[in-house]
Length: 536
Image (cartoon, rainbow, N blue to C red; front, side, top):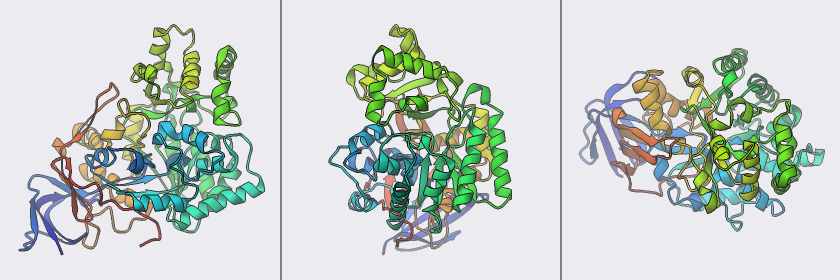
């Protein structure tokens, strides 16, 4: 059996308690002792003097669903951030289940979010997906959720019609199948097509299929701007009636007029529900901008029976005219970002055609003016048609004060919400730098949180939310997912202007007691495992 002895480190154990000086002894894949002045004659000694020693970071919200099969950089951008465990199937979006009749449209729809899927890479069932992940060389640990948007696409495509009774039963069976394969719960993407058409009763019925196994509902709410409070109330109600714990994904308030107001109303609703005994947490990312798809900016009335028809419906003068008209209307429960933040705060981040590559990194407002468009929405229509809907965007939609308010809450945890679409050259900086930015900006520079609080939001709190009983803390008997780094030297190097370098300063990453990153360099890409709830 191999032994590793980490000496003289400042231990942030993940609990949120103040750090302490100590040594850590690892045998095989587990921590076996934490105490001062440990000696072991057979151990490989790592001197952590002047450095922090923490549990591996856990990011429960990335969109790297197919990265193990398609992305040659998968592992590098995660481990240089200290991320040892991640979860996929978020926002109701996943490549599974993919039925032949809707596979191409589903893959086109998902491409800006999870990346390009070859059509021969097909996961019709959750068993197909888990077998593929089990067979893959995983650089990080991965867990997964049942993704309800993709389930609805498999059963009835992208249209606006509600489930029939028979279809609802099939949707519930898909959820149960995912749980039987080890899913950690279910995700909703109520902002996205086709789930944006689902009412509260339908959502509750689907989520109820996940009740009773200890899994959690993680949900992208219906609206994060004008309808934020109502959208938070909706998912609180769905979770309560379905009988499942709730985690609200990337809790935030978008739209300039909503800054410094709506978020506090939403927090109040969450706190009231928690005080009444409901199990609710939320997560956030440490940026004042988010990322999504250009298609998500379209009013729900623009959506057609299929993704393909949606794109075709935007072509020509009539398509542009219709989009202009619908953007000028008020749609109940839908947040109009073109109005709430403006085209000058919406940046093109990914396209698929070489001729449009110059647009990446520029705002829609600036591009429309440069290219001679009378209305920015006309550019949106043309671009979606040319790119077959496969366009990613960054939206500078938030107030830093609001982000800080969410970060300070005792029941929130850190995520990245990283998208893997496009070539990565103009990706949102959170893909590459979330954890380092969080510590550097929120702790060291602005002192929004203490170091121990911030570490807990990346380790124990996400582990607890997901029910990971042997990760997230530095404790004897826990798996040895361990980081060693100097916090002041752990830096992010990605921004909105086109700088997309990975983090620097992560000295050592151990996963299950194996050295996977040393002095910022990957030394092992195969030590990750597929995490399956209820499986040993």
